Image (cartoon, rainbow over all chains, first blue to last red; front, top):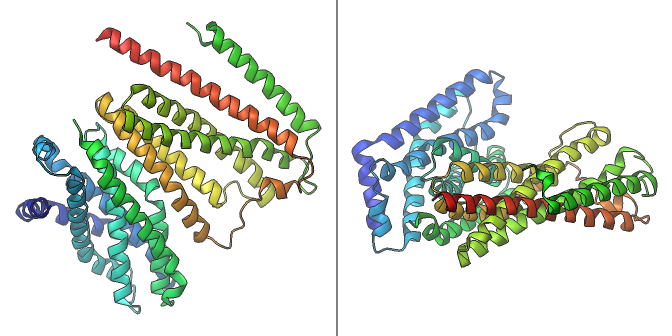
Length: 219
Length: 223
């Protein structure tokens, strides 16, 4: 599994196309939001958690498309399908790499997001980073599973968001709600349940992905 | 050949039409009414059994999908697809009848009520399911992809329901049908409706299954 992750990281290091394109896309969506919702800073603060997770969700679709098309472009699926390894591990490595790339792109566009929308940082950064990590991994885990399903589809670019958005709706609700509580500096006890939902979702989708990946990539 | 030219289809169609007529007659005449919402409230006699059968349809998708992945028989795949189609038609009816009731009762066609929202999300997932079936790649692989999606979709339901329920806690859920009619002898009519709708879902399931089977045979012939 270490080798698989290393392969993806090297690939990205050489081309840098995924993180950079995700970052620029995230920035562009942020800009559009800033233009489209030209309201008072107080209202912006209320909208911000929802907007942030919409940007993250859109950006993740871009990354997921790319993450699974590397091999598709050169018909290199065969190499890891025929490799003597557990295919569940291929899924887990894609999940981990997707999570790393999304988080990197996110760290780059989150600063402009706060700057453009005039949001002040008067909340716990630690909690905020925690929810970003949990939300990202939950989105990527269900996303990797769906991208695997749409691997050979003619309309992969359309199929991934069409399937991902409704399936990931619990993640978006839970992550947005948690971010609202974090922005309002509410005690953890009040929003514990959302973290529990995110964890359950992450574990379920990662487990299903691990179990079913063998069936998905079979020729 | 037209749909009704086949004898078995004709029997199913006439049976369904006859029972639907009786059903509407019963709802309009002898079924107990809610005192505060005497007219439009009776839509619950249709809405609840339709929702019930739609969820049964989606449950069957999951069961047949598991059986397909386990036993690898093409018949299980056709069963799963036919259940998905029947379930989606009924889910569409849930999304039509829900707002018809909600407008006079709550003043809005759409309210983000947990059960209605869960139904909408499931409906959207299954539209994606049909897209995957259509554009997913070669038929053998698509059957496997669809089976995996059918399982994930149903397992997602509890989480969608829970998160929507907690999302807007101040929002009132729509009433249980028993409370709504204050348990005043609704059971006989409701039972007839449950049976009728279950029969309808079985009929639609059988028709679609036959269609998929015939399609497969034709494809094999061509090959």
